[in-house]
Length: 65
Image 1: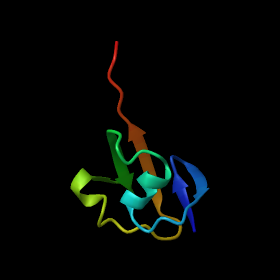
Image 2: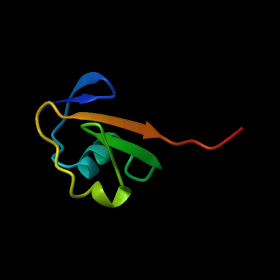
Image 3: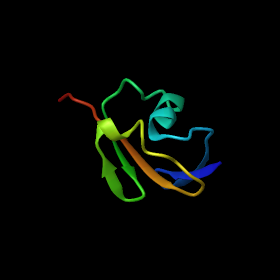
């Protein structure tokens, strides 16, 4: 299916945010996810369903100086 990921069309077979993060190699990374303009808690990633044309923003967090 096609979703909008960080502003660009993207193909995915993921059906949940958690599966999408696995696909992107970000499952174990600190991230912030916005799904259709709603920020999700990490505990919601498993239950948040993705459907055709959903908009997702995934921001990775990095520490450093």
